[in-house]
Length: 475
Image 1 (cartoon, rainbow, N blue to C red):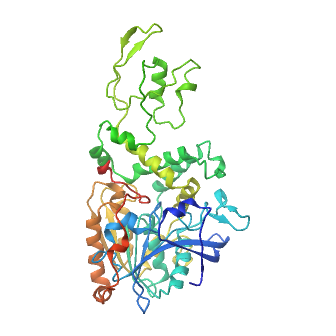
Image 2: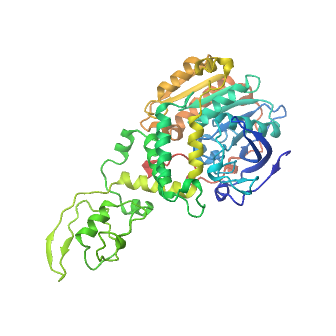
Image 3: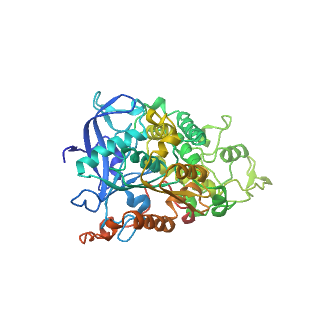
């Protein structure tokens, strides 16, 4: 390989992705005009490149995904499936700003020999594809048979097509947009403000050993609400109380301790009021009163009938408190805690700002900086897939893409799961992409299979680490 393969001991997140390769590009100029040096790029591949270099499939990951397609689109990968390594040379490259190996706030700035942190420059989707193409060139790819992506990955897939029909032949985009909407920009801002409000954020100069996990967790919670639909949450959770198993998984849930006597009224009220707050400590709050050291939280009790005792241990009265803790809360807390362990706050800020820059017509004077004219210029065959219940990247945005791309087919998935359906409705997505491939790349599907490929190379199925979603049906 022409570019040097490197390791990132300073970046613990890159170690979470097993079997990926990280190479270093000596120098890259960004859209902003800034030049990056010694730029790491992480990627994974499946299958073999044919001698013509024309059977490449590029898969683009979503916002918090990694180069490991098995982790978040695994059911689509394998012999006879949409992502068939016996037919295609499949490549997934990690995007700039991500903590999972490519250049980001958690990689080292060679100019000062320290992590970039908040000084990592603004990057764009266009920067991603320009850098990723350098890797494909080095791998010997002469032509991309098909590029596929959902959500942020769909933005990258669209940008790949501006290299022209001679380089990219076909494109599949799911639940994405041709330009980032005011609605999505606003959600990104709200999530960043959650991170900024964490005292540990410190303008982004926090140590990796003590990051602003409260702010990042809150940002993840609000993001999850945009990924699903109201009906999805109502059906999965309703007003149910969390089971003991749910409480155990929900790492933010207060510990229920055995106690000899019930807490004081003020202490118990304060504990309920602050339930779910990371740093709440009953031993130091409540108007400086002398309190029990026990951390009480009757979270799973629908009606609290604990007795209130006076200083002589005599019961005064019994309270009946309505349920205040629900399985939906438990799910959000668990997801926030899990996310905070595997993602970086500065990286989250960097990537959401990258999304805000997305507009295929931006800074393209040849198309009068028009999103519509830019789409109309594309000549690839397109499959555009929308989710009927998606309130983040709405179905109307998929209609907009399909309307202006001349060689396009629009399909709708009627799923109640909202935006996350592009990571959940595997059967429907696999069918749509396979049908598209049969129509537009039949010569690759009919070629002699790579008999050396075995699906055992994909590894064992495991709980998703990097995927955008964990199905609440398993919660």
